[in-house]
Image 1 (cartoon, helix red, strand yellow):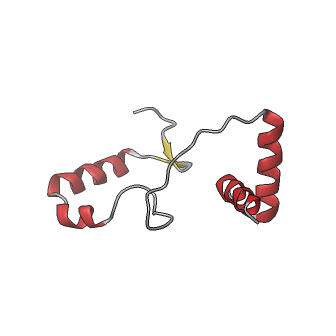
Image 2: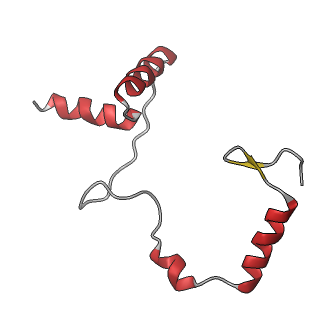
Length: 87
């Protein structure tokens, strides 16, 4: 293993790898794993569609700056802008 392997910035040790291997060898509760769900949570009754959007570097910077100011995500701001078109 490389000396600089990390998970969320925390170094992964040989001891941690051994612990994970031991856990896997003991087995997992498959039913419990299936109950966890998959993917991102839904946004409503219908499935959401992912749409690619091309922005210039200046547009991305402006979007990120506003998102940071308002403590929102890029997606939140774009959805709000689309909703405002109907108003």
